[in-house]
Amino acid sequence: MPDAFLGERICVYVVPTGRPPTLAELRELMKSRGVAGYKLPDRLELVDTFPLTGLGKIDKKVLAARIAATASNPLKPAQRENR
Image (cartoon, rainbow, N blue to C red):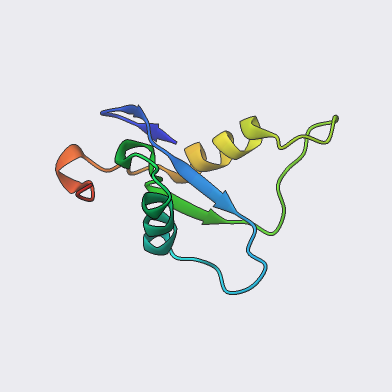
């Protein structure tokens, strides 16, 4: 998603099959699996389905456009969560 300071920040989209995870739970799981802190998502979006291209692949452009439309108030560096 767009960010005034970094250019982009990481947003993860999840199609939950049961109780949806929280962002904190997802970040903790990823950290426990060795994902570097700078690669952890800053935002979690829950969706019913992923938009698909004509070839049946996830349409990342549609997801990027959705998040750009809703990310009207990006966090300033001092507001970011400690990593």
